[in-house]
Length: 148
Image 1 (cartoon, rainbow, N blue to C red):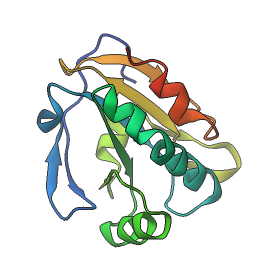
Image 2 (image 1 turned 90 degrees about the horizontal axis):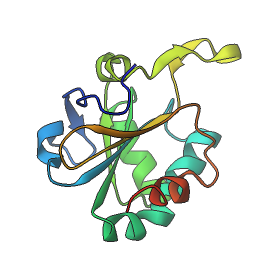
Image 3 (image 1 turned 90 degrees about the vertical axis):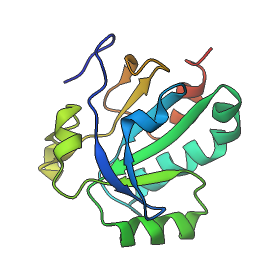
Image 4 (image 1 turned 135 degrees about the horizontal axis):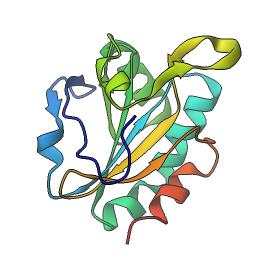
């Protein structure tokens, strides 16, 4: 599990835009990196819509929002189109990055899988804040309030 002050683990993942993305490309911006269990499920849909709703506020504060799940690019594409999501989703089918960030574990009745965690990564690539066991409703505004 990464913690505040740690250097954020790098990644190389395919995005919903059809391009490969790494952590380095977000250098110089605040990055809201959120991990979620599955596209188009109730909680994950609420969380994505909350980020979409606060996206302009986050962008004004110099932040970029990126979601990561193990879903395929095709699944991400359908999810983005269905809910008109205006931010990047990355596919981590082997859960490598999910595990490196400590966002894989016991989900109770749902078994082992991706945990709903968010990491606010500063312009310098270090973890500024960790949100664990996130409640989807209001989470976008909660994250936005933490960025100066």
